[in-house]
Amino acid sequence: MVEKNKAKKSRHKKSVSIIFWVFLFLILLLLVIGLLGYNYLGFGVEEGIPVILTEENFPAFLQQHKIINDLPEDSDIALNIGGQEISIEGNEVSLSHNEDAEIIINADKSLIDELNKNGYGAIKEAIKNGEITIETEKSAEKLAKKYASTLLKNVGFFKELI
View 1: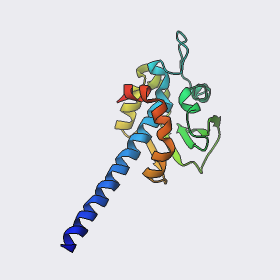
View 2 (view 1 turned 90 degrees about the vertical axis):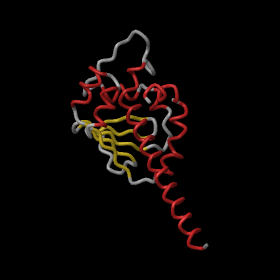
View 3 (view 1 turned 135 degrees about the vertical axis):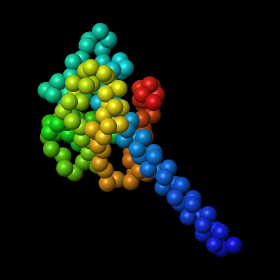
View 4 (view 1 turned 90 degrees about the horizontal axis):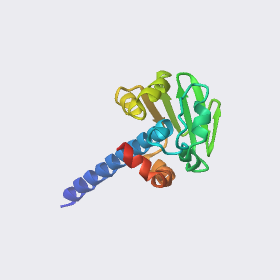
């Protein structure tokens, strides 16, 4: 009887762990898609104003978006696109190195051109092909608690991506 309970608890613990990792992956995936592809569904950009992304205007493009303003004040994200290092701390976007970031997103420089051609579909494809990597040392639980409100505030946008 005691062994059955131990086995049951062990399976439950594994299930909870798997759920947290899946949830973490989804949060990070949605955050990446949100940060990199926000304008392609018409969110956060004035209607009628086309945005052609370049390496030079990408940080300013990120700064203007609602999703950045909806990030927690203590968010700490590093975005590295082909060697260009963009730091997102709180609601501020800057060109700087941030080695202490809690989430590090790496992408190839060609992603910006692909975004211009294919919209957010380019992000899905780049993730699928391993061209975007996400690194973090935070637990899924901590990240889920911290970024859940950002995801909920932008549920309309994220629903379009799934």
